[in-house]
Image (cartoon, rainbow, N blue to C red; front, top):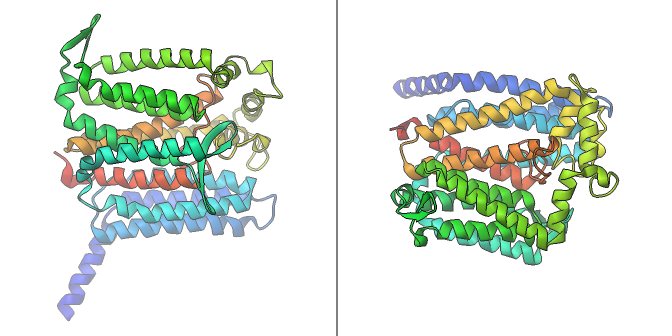
Length: 432
């Protein structure tokens, strides 16, 4: 019995010493969450109570997951969870000043997603997911078609499905399934794609039968753009395929050819379908209808200018009144209330999360898991680029959520589960 207790004590001591860097960073994240929510709620009463309720609950959830990893002897990356936790803390900070009820609902989704992370991070059999790539692809396409036919239209796009009291956005789940499908196809046929034998002008391309995935993605791009009226998801799916193809093969043709086909498809869609042309007209000249179709982007520019370098202060911005600011434009709220110096840490955390994800993905010794990790990271990075680029009018406003910051249950749970997959891929035992 004494030996058993001694062994247990050594085991717990070893577990506590493990993942020390992660634990130290999570302490900082918990402090930021409590302080941020409290400051954002200071005008509505009960600020510290709400800070402890929301920020404290997030901190407890993160630490429960951390200690579970310690006890399980998990060897995954120690920086991914704190970076994600910091972005979640920013999300609660912004939402607490907008609506305490909305912030509380977002917290529930975060805790559910954190509970799902071990489900994705601990199993050792995810490499067998490549065998179900066609099932994942067909399921994703079926969800898109079902949403296009029976979905709920909001803000001009049909993105939501309602099943009884449950309402969710299938596009977020489809993106993860599409990543599995593309990673499985490319990992199985990497040599065929990396050594093209046919010719198209000055470019070497694969045999026509091997171009079917590209043609399929082009058709999917046009379907989502035209039928669902979802410019953001159309660009995201298509760019995800192109970038993963280039990463898997190193052939520049997989960037050039999709770009030419995507540009041609966009021009054709804009010339045939008025709603597609309207999206581009708003982007090029929002001042033509500042109180109509261009209202959102015009108010976005005003809000960012109003924020300046230091911001107006938490809870004192006017960007909260912009339609869908908590889902599509949380970066605008951060930029107005915390200024450029407050927006910089948010974008830096997103950059570091992507950089760390790329590092652990390239370090992975399994071809399919490496590409799956790249699919997760590329999806996050493209979403941030399109969301931030839309604010500066580098690209049209797409309505894509900012990972871990925007309000939304489907996106939050899916992204946290994807984080678990990335943690799984970062395990030391699968390094080459």
